[in-house]
Image (cartoon, rainbow, N blue to C red):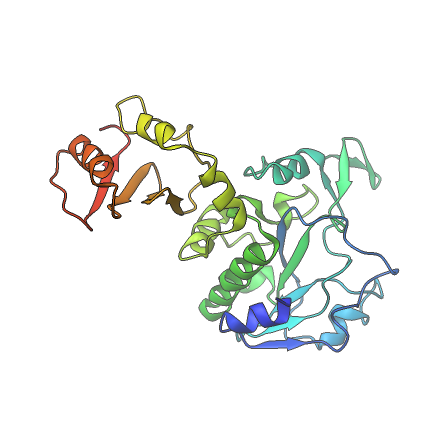
Length: 283
C-alpha cells in the first residue's frame, strides 16, 4: 500500500506535497532502508513547506516527513533527501543487523572524517519534528503523532523498533531530540504495533521443542526471538504465545491442551481451555 495511505489509515492528518512520490535530490534514490532517523528541525515557529523542500541553504528536500506542532504530517518524498549526512559505520552495521545501535564515536577534523563513516541519506528514512531544542518539552499531541508515524514506517519498511534512532544516535555531530528518551520512545512505538513479516519469520524459525526448553530454570532472554523490549507474538502450530520483557504468554488452542498444561504447571497454576498463562523466566 502507498505510504500516504498507510499514514492516513493510522488516523493521521496527512498533507502529501505535490509530486512526493517521485520528488528527490539530484535524481537519486535510496539504496536501502535499514532504519528511521528522527530529527529536530531546529527552526523556531512553523516554516512553510517550501522551507523543507527548496527554500533552505541546501536548496533541496531536507526530510521525508515533517510532524508539525498540531500533529499533522507533511509527506515530502519517499526517495533520496538530505537529512542524515555522514555517520558512524558501526551504527549502520547494527541497524542492518536489526540490533539497537551503539552510541556513535565518529570523529572529524576540519570537516573530514577521522573514523569509518557512511552516508545515511541513501540508507535511512527521515522524520522531522517541527520544534526547536530550546523550547522545552515536545507537545503531547506532536509526540503522539511522532510515535504513530514511526509505527507506520516500521510496518511499511518491515523494520523493528531496534532500527529507530535520533540524529545524535547516528553521528556525534548532532545533538537534537535531547528532550526525548530514545529508549522510552522505542517502547512507546512498540506498544500495540502490528506484527511485521520479519517478526513472523523469526517466530516461525523457532520450533516447539526450542520453546519447551524456555520453560525451565535455564531459560534466558538471550535465547529465542530478540526484539529488545518490543512485544513479539505469533503462532507456532496451534499455540499462541508471546514474549515481552522476559515473559511468555500462552493460550490454549484446540489440540494443544497437554502442551499448554505443561507450561501452566511450570507456573504452578491451573489451566482450562482458553486461559492465558504467564511464565516468569526464572520459574
